[in-house]
Image 1 (cartoon, rainbow, N blue to C red):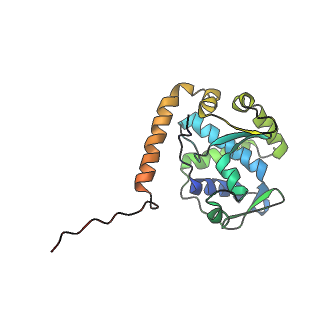
Image 2: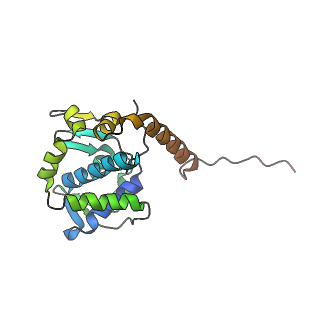
Image 3: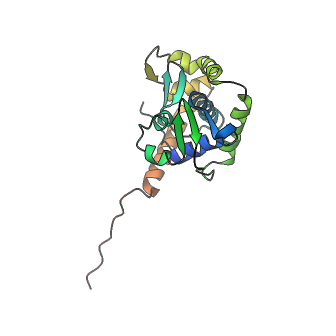
Amino acid sequence: MRHPFHFDQKIASQAVAFLLRNEPGQRMNYMRLLKLLYLAERETLAEAGIPLTGSRTVALKRGPVLEDVFSLIRGEHPAAPEWSTYFTVENYEIRMTADPGLGRLSRFIAAKLGDVARRHRSDDEWQMVEITHRLPEWVKNDPGDSSKEIPLNDILAAVGREADLDKIISDARFDAMSIKFFSDDQPQTIQPQPAS
């Protein structure tokens, strides 16, 4: 099954900023950050049937990550130039250098990010790896030393929403069509004017 969600880089940037905002020096080990974001993404799917960022999820040796966010951190994503206006990475730490704001985060998403951050306040990056290694969807897709996509249905099964798969995919396709239709990035067509 093709990944049904549209990755929203602006929401991802604002979610990262939300998590960094109250950290000392507005910085965090990026592996820890990736785990916090994954848990928040997973819980929004469980509770609301919608993703936080819409990124594909991959299983890596050190647990699940949101592939698009990991690519942004590594500077390998097409949106990396915009991302780098807000964040820098040095020695496995991501630091916020400019604030992308919070305007794209719903109250639900902001509350979810805050809740996940509070619950894992005292967990370092290695504890977060251990926590995510116990998640059923990672166990099922353990990639060894490689990487492997975690199918959406494995995540939904793990959070008790497998029966909602068809509806979640249908809603995601409708959202993707709406985004494509209303996107500012779409070429504008010029209507021919009647001859005078």
